[in-house]
Each structure stands twice: as structure tokens, then as C-alpha cells.
Length: 222
Image 1 (cartoon, rainbow, N blue to C red):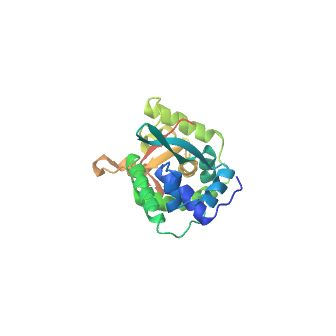
Image 2 (image 1 turned 90 degrees about the vertical axis):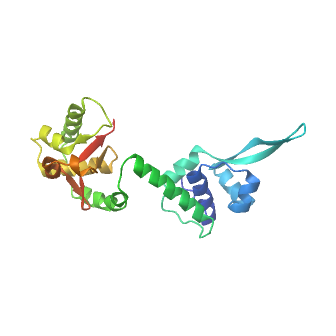
Image 3 (image 1 turned 60 degrees about the vertical axis):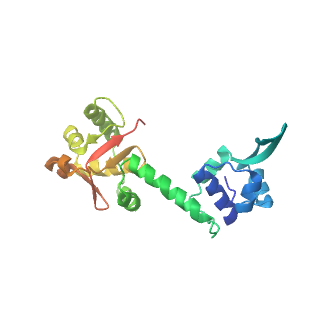
């Protein structure tokens, strides 16, 4: 989608995306989205208006128009993370909500904050050093993972186990392939938090990314 919103429109869209709110049109107009800007976002198909019952006054029903994001808005957002936002104080609660959701995500998946912020550039840099990888390497990694996990996905497998099952693959090639798979979202490499769980073979088999050692791997079904 080629639509380029103004900073004010972009802030309104990200507010709705991050908070999950579906506010009444009159209330949201006071905060972020006046009528002219709202009509533009409606016209390009990023928001809809939905008529909802507000309250009952005696026997008379009262309705209000609520702003609802469309699927097109989510598609737009997925392609526009780098967008200029209005420098408004109203952006503060949006940032607070984003930080809270990020924190919940990192805790749920046991991802250290420092790793989240530091690994992406390193992963991209490392992936560029890989010119060509044999097409069967990822398949071998998948087979070894399933063998170590008992045929299940999204369970913890130690990299030490993986390396034992892939002894015929060089360490350099295996490390670079794992980094590329992490970058592509096919696996998640993680650190063992409990020092008592970390054995010498775990340290020897770890994949180092931006100075952080990763001892275990989770794989999703491709």
C-alpha cells in the first residue's frame, strides 16, 4: 500500500494498533483524529465507523459511531515501521503501552532485553557473510531437532545435542545456518538462565550473537 499518512494520522493509527481501542468517534476526535483526517483514513480503507449502542435514556436508545481498524490497517502497519509520528504529548501513553506489551512478550518467551536490542544488527551482518548454503542443511537441522525433541516442535533442545546429531556438518556452516534461520524466524536461539543447568558441553556448543551465548534452540513448524 502506497498511502503515506501525515504524522498526525500515523500517530492515530499506531495508537489504535497498539492499545487495541475502538473509541467513540467524538471522543477520539478530541484526542488525535479530527474529522478531516478521519475521512482521509476512511477513504483509503484503514478505518471504518461502526454504529454501537451507547446507553439507554428511558426507552430511547442512544448510539455512537466507533472507530474500528480494518485488516488493511494491519497490512499497512506491517510495512511501515519506519514512519514519522506527530511530536505530541499524546504519544507518551502510546509508548507506555508499547513498552508494557514488549515487556510481556520478552518475559513470555524468556528473551533478555539486551539481546532483543543488540542482536538484530549483528544477525543481519552475519547473514551477509553467508554466500551460499547447501539446500539440504536446513533439512538436516530440522531432522536433528525433531530427533532430539522426540518429534515435537517448540520444545527446548540443547545445541550440544544438535551438534552431536550433526557431527558431519562443520561448526562454521552450522552456526551461520542457525543465525540465518533465527533471522528468518524459523528458530529461536536462547540462553540458559540457570547457571546450574549449563554444562561444559553447553558452553562449547553455544552460538554467540553480539556477545551473548545461546545454549538452546526452539523450532517452529515451517
